[in-house]
Amino acid sequence: MKDILSMEDLTDAQIYQLLETAEKIESEGSFPFHDQKYAANLFLEPSTRTKNSFFIAERRLGMEVMDVSGSDSSLTKGESLYDTVKTLYTIGASLCIIRQSQNGILREIANEVDVPIINAGDGTGQHPSQSLLDLYTIYQEFGGFTGIKVAIVGDIKHSRVARSNGKALERLGAEVFYASKPEWQDDSISTNYLSIDQAVELADVVMLLRIQHERHEQKAESDSYLEAFGLTEEREKKMNKNAIIMHPAPVNRGVEIAGSLVEAPRSRIFTQMKNGVTIRMAMINALLKEEL
Ligand code: NCD
Image (cartoon, rainbow, N blue to C red; front, side):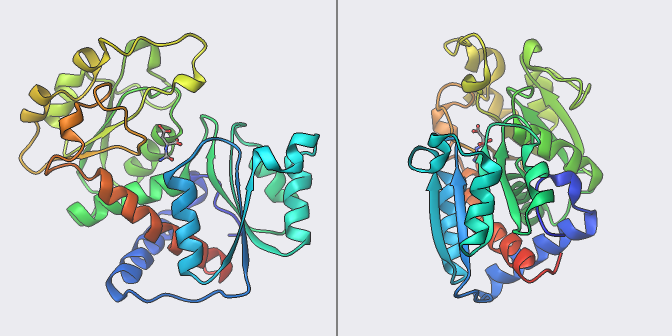
């Protein structure tokens, strides 16, 4: 496999291969070295965790990093993303990490250029590195996926995290259900919607999502959202004893989750961020070594 563009491109065996490599990197603390290889990071939408954890993953693997952000690249002069990627490859990039807003466009580019591409989030489409770090966090916690009940809660319709995680988790044996404000339900992702109260009480994993304001035509009301659709302190008390809270972040404290729960003992939000570096090292290494 040359690129990682969607969770649907990965077989179950390839997913486990990446999780096991991440585990090995973490337990052995040593990893392959790819010096003299250049990574080009193109982030054309805002990012803190994904961009910087790719940067750290690349540097830990000994790579040189080119940071190509939208505002200072020739994309502002009308150059297409295809021409930018082809240019970066021509001058020596061994890998391109790309975040941008058009669903599916990376597939067309990846088919035309030889450089490996990792999709770091495309619009409301896919976000495979986030999904893999989420899977890794669940795998570490529960030792597998079979029968694990996962509630994905929030702005499902506009979330590439929901779209990437739901099907992947189901295929690995988890039981996935959703809770969302009715207008943000999306039947193309699932028809298995519960109320927030039912979802929270049943789940082993409560995975919260931010309201994706930047993808809405009308500004959504945030003030009453927590009580109606979010994880309040009262709802958290009804979670199963060993259930965990996850969130891809950025978190809006007091909107989708009570601020005090972000650092609750059962929260794995910061573990997810840490796992993001390890899983990205595993992804990059597998592509550079052509091991996937
Ligand atoms: C997510 C994204 O960009 O889709 N963030 C992330 O990569 N950690 C979720 C979000 O922005 O809400």
